[in-house]
Length: 507
Image (cartoon, rainbow, N blue to C red; front, side, top):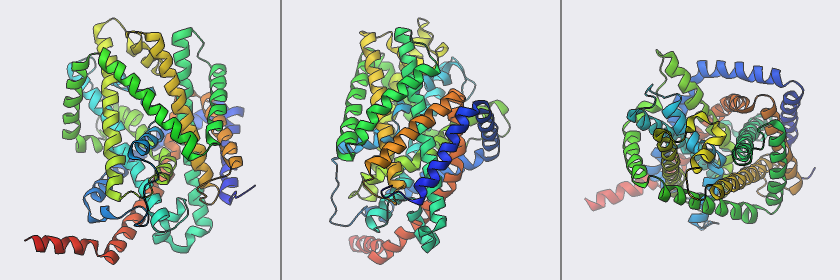
């Protein structure tokens, strides 16, 4: 097969094994993933919290450090995409379906079902629900993406390496990046990516199914979800074959446009003043409790620890599992940006957009619940958005628009996923062949269906947490390698010395 590497065949065999087990022995796969997840969350919860906090610290360091002036590419390189398009593409790849799926489901769950602080159904409960939602979807998530993307972009465009995870470790392991050790690293990254993207596709299929059931009574079952996945697979394969500058670019801009329209409708016709007050209040609480939430592990409170395992640890694992895919994709579209510009736009801007989204939709769900007219908390997570939209003018049209947004996010995530996995399994080719992309597109869809068949939402979450653990170690090494190389280049360029000299001259 053209340009297919050893990593391609090894990864394909492992993914095929997972799929076959999910189809032939769904109960066994569910049991294995459940028990493994329980072991990881109880034994390595501290590790997930610690390492993600390190990634946050590294990003803030790069934001203020003199090395932030270094460009991701040669000095003459210019960005390929405009800032609005760049932001739309990285945002669509970075959160996608998850933002729609959890936009109402997470805040209402924290407020009315299971509170992070035990304050269910109170005004304090609303504040706690929102600040922990911000915590899960904000700076920590984008710091995970940012560290991987920066490493890939720097070593690819600045140092001339191939677009592979293993190549970012050359300052640490030298020539071993080109041998079996490098291949193992890349296989781990591919498996993590496949499971991460497949999990998100599973969420998308469930939510489309939930919307169709809520609106038209179409049953929520495996048959319906299979049909949804097959239809969307055909759509994203068409997009994937058109290339990065056409299909993904157009869909990303379409995503942002449709999402912005839905956001404005809910914001304007909802409790606008409540939303603005809640947003400002939550930003303050988020900043005030940032460090405390980052290291909250609750060693003496079993109930709180279970909540952290189910939510925070799951999210940190999700971001880590998604980071090879999102990181490589963001790196691919970020050539020509400086490190400082990259950190600002990848870490801070998407976080603020997400905060506005969650405040608007989460606030709408909580307002509906408090009014007593709608019980959003009694709906399935995939139905909660449609329950909220029911109270708005032209509710049917808005719900259909929401389904369309989910489909476009679905297509964009899968489209980007096939592109990135294709790059990772063809020795870092920046334009993988259509044949490779088609194969991975099919396997992403089959993997999503296998996980849904073996246990639905719980199986998706279990598998995500398991896949993230080995790659988190590789991520830690990537960060060390990046910092080592940046500081070496800074010394060679005399960047720190220039700034020191300017300060002396100003005095």
